[in-house]
Length: 336
Ligand SMILES: Nc1ncnc2c1ncn2[C@@H]1O[C@H](COP(=O)(O)OP(=O)(O)OP(=O)(O)O)[C@@H](O)[C@H]1O
Ligand SMILES: Cc1ncc(C[n+]2csc(CCOP(=O)(O)O)c2C)c(N)n1
Ligand SMILES: [Mg+2]
Image 1 (cartoon, rainbow, N blue to C red):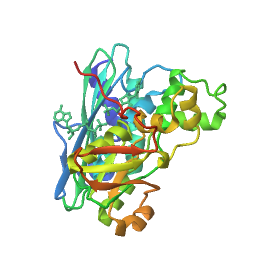
Image 2: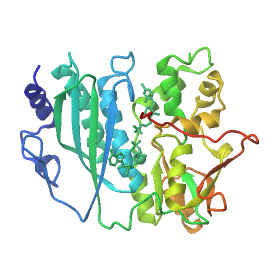
Image 3: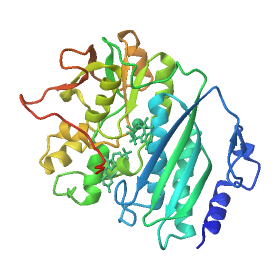
Image 4: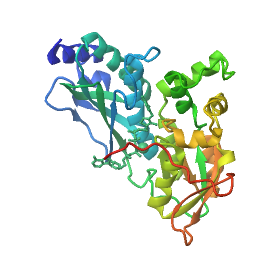
């Protein structure tokens, strides 16, 4: 199969033969032209996310479909817009297709992306196809905001803020351990429906777009999505804001079954949950006056607070750990 027939198949799947305004009123030109043309709003909010076979997913693994891989790549990218509190707009997909990748494979992959886009108000407006030594996806997302001051940023935490999460942590890392076969659900005493939910949390994460927009509009100013693990991502909030975040490890909510998977791996459940990553929940900071409304907007749990940095400088301190325990840190790609 050639590049052109794959693009033609994607074009047909997206309905790109017809007028773009039918798919989305902001679109003037999209898939099929040299570049997309979009009616802009005052502020464009843009993020790029790459996913690579063997690093972010394993293609061909039983239980992982190409639609799952497409969904995850777009979900991870849209999650960065959620973290900013921007409204989702356009999605641009660069696809590296390995030997043997068929048009059918391409359609399954883009189908998983398109289904999530359709649900979240995003639209695939363009992309690129190349031959590659391994399957990779680079997803660029553009979100929009009326006012740049009404966004969540990493440097917006203030002393006295409470730190909240939009949902439980650890499900994605637990689902990955099950998919990898590092933990056997039955031997770990995990019910089949609980195991299936963990795997689904890993393969089909849900970007918290509605929550991000609602929290930004409420007046929250600091947020980040949990992609590398709360221990690392809360560290970004602390460092960029120049603050000390005091978090209670025991207050971190766990998805059902996460404790069983962690114990089967010989790890502390909450340490596992804050270091695993890819949960794509939002971690936000709210002034005390906003906490009740923030709960209505999607914060499920308050896990700590923000203080001015002391003599040790900005950073995250987890209470509820044994004295002298080594610092916690999330996922980091080795680059050397
Ligand atoms: N190659 C690069 N060139 C320029 N800027 C980059 C590059 N890689 C990352 N950045 C910027 O560095 C910042 C942190 O990037 P990073 O990818 O760690 O974001 P993240 O949201 O923490 O992680 P995730 O990849 O899980 O979304 C972002 O502002 C990003 O735009
Ligand atoms: C096969 C396989 N092995 C390991 C992992 C775990 N993993 C990969 S990237 C990442 C952090 C976010 O990445 P990025 O910062 O690039 O968005 C995590 C937790 C996985 N998903 N699949
Ligand atoms: Mg992010």
